[in-house]
Amino acid sequence: MSEAERHARPQAGRELHPPLAAAHQTDVALVRRWFRHLELCVRSADYEGARPLFAQDVITFGTFAAFTTGRDATETEQWRTVWSRIDGFRWQLDDLRTILSADRLMAVGMAVFTSVGYTEDGIPYDRPGRATAVLARDALTEDWVAQHLHVSLFRDVPTRSFGTKAENTAPAI
Image 1: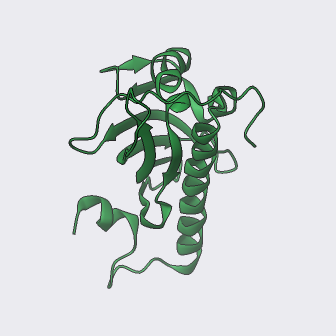
Image 2 (image 1 turned 60 degrees about the vertical axis):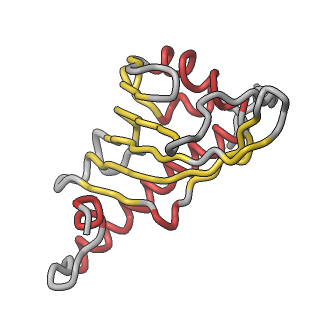
């Protein structure tokens, strides 16, 4: 069993007390909601709608940049070079993995995604990958905000897609 799996769910013999178990389930549901919100933004190329999901000083890894620092740079160098060029982006959230801090103010979410990319000739291809998001909040009543995101494609998947989906000027949600 991986370290992530061990932290993501209570194991036999390590059951959480009922109040803690309920809080854990709530926190995991909120991490899942963060990923779903991002999915809607990616699918509709809604850059403006994605901005509140990320800290102003977010640090990301991605397809085209080793490090990108800041939400504006991430939007320019990552989101705008990918989202409008792919289709069918979907997280496989039934297999979401999470690690939650003891104070419940930080979480790590790990998920696999599927999408469709396009060759220069417009031929579609499967474009699966995975991502790790480090999420934080200042209070338990606040939404998660990404401090870090690392998105990568699986081995042998072309890194460039040449789709031409229109960018969304209206919020996805």
